[in-house]
Length: 172
Image (cartoon, rainbow, N blue to C red):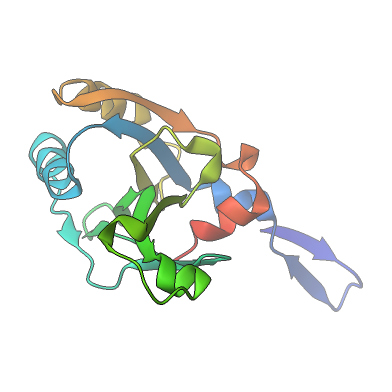
């Protein structure tokens, strides 16, 4: 937030878009583990208490509404919010729904995958840490992630490089 003076009697505050993104760390994770196992290993390795958030993240596209599971932990001691977010949503639509054909079997299913962040289709999860400060040890976090066996790769994503649509998908 920057301070702007218009007159000597009036002070205006302008919310800079960059200020909002500076306190969020987004780590992309590629792994073959299901989401509940990933949450378990993150809890064990990072000393978190990620719990499945019952309200899934919904994203509406031309194919309908897709839902992405996620886990959340509010770290009261450090004032951080941790989220493990699924990047892929797999769904099937019967051809009856898609084309209106009356006669069709199970083989007439149309399967598709939608992504929370389409720029990163090869990524399975995102670990989002909110309210970080300059003293947050991001390097230490990455070292701890390297010790989890079934994580094949992980890296920090620069949120400013994402499309506006993808950035909006990360606002909960």
